[in-house]
Length: 246
Image (tube, rainbow, N blue to C red; front, side, top):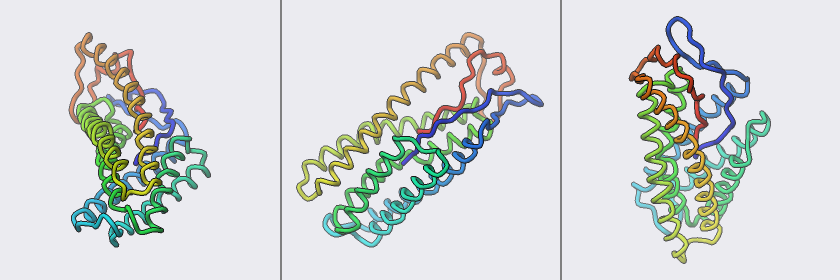
């Protein structure tokens, strides 16, 4: 699950016919390291959860695969909170997300119950993890104004909206109806849905900025290239910085 950290990037410069983004602060470099670690965590939890489902887990007792997935993920969340606090990189949404997740994991790990419901939740929330981070890395390597970036962003947004915006509420509704699921798991799942709503709000702001940029590019007849930067982009008055990762 992703982390939202404030990003302040320097203006876009043009050197040797190419456009690229420079880091402006040490905090952004530190955040870049955190993002790469989050990518590794997201991919581990997604694929290990998928494997746990493949093993046909019981609705009653947690399997070894489920216990291991939650245990490693809990360690990451705890470590991430401590590192972010130490480096002053955390925000309240990150802390909220991690604490909610840790409470749910702890309850299931200790009782060895309800883990299968958490695993399905992980699959729903982490399926957009890979395109989200590829979007970020493409931008950081200087290809923010390309079609490959726009395509990866579109894939990320569609997966996020479909799984977190459509499937997650349906899934949580069925969780609340299931008497086998503990109240703690139900409450934490609802908290994570609330967390996702915040990012839908942020996505809306990003789409508004992108629409303004699209109108200017259309008016000036400036197109994005797939894997290189169109030099004419330097003529645009609208040059958005890399949007925060969701």
